[in-house]
Image (cartoon, rainbow, N blue to C red; front, side, top):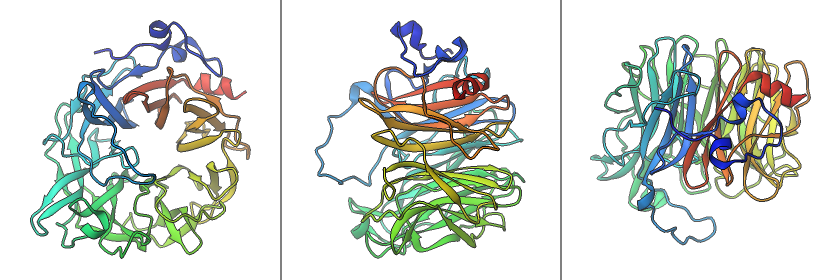
Length: 441
């Protein structure tokens, strides 16, 4: 099925901040069903070039409830959504019919800041990690659990989801509220070079109050997702900021965990390093940004990309002036970071960075920003031997707010970008390598 509409054909215009070849400029598509409310996409490219896209589904557009009045800073710990999947085997020209992944309707707990993850390795197995709504018999209350499912038939069917940890033996309702006893959430998943599937999540059992932190636990599969190890406490001494989603990346023989750590002088993005396949993280590097002193969880992840011993990390911080997205690099495999720089200092607001490394080792960073009016998507490039990040360039998108971008890199250097657009739609565009290079000049 061919989904979506091109911006030129459907709108008659498509305002670009820079010129792209026709193969890119007319390529944005709506992947989520027009009748449904899609948010928070995640994307990956398999070894065969197939693009795999997942997102959260909040139901029919016709059933959208009116917004709930909330006090500033107030939020709910409850979420009832579904998880949808689609793939493209032709570089984004056409997409399969979106299908629901979770077996029980409404069993996915998800927000824009706690999204599911998808990875695909040499076996072509599609691995999906997501937070799930689950009843705890041991506590007698609702919990949010870390769950996993996979497809071994190229996305035609998915296995019955499994929970990756033992049932909650604690009750943190006084902390979480709304009848929720425990959360094993804000997690991530990665595929190591040796084929191991490593899932990680935050466990709040040790939190004393809202000023306290969580710990990070992992479960590891060495057999392509058939079985997982018993969960292991791998990171933290109640110092993992409990609502900033974990991220994961890999060196040749290391596992890197991106997270926000609670320091005595701020809650700041950090990268932890594991040399034992993700079972423990003995080295933690704080990104070289001014401390962000904040009384609460900022809901900001740490993006990473690895190029040999060079590790790039990006995140939002309000410790710097101006507040916004900042990028740093490590030349020792993630043991320390330097060269912190603002990605879009001219913007009134910038957030939600994602990093991708091209085959020629060019770093491409995509983020959302406001320079006046709606949030839009921007991209910049950094050449491997240059300390300078290129100027921000606006990506093609229809009118309205564009937010929460995700990216994946094709073997030919094509950058695939998906995002959440105004009206709760999941959109997609591809940026050919030649177009990105031309824009950077």
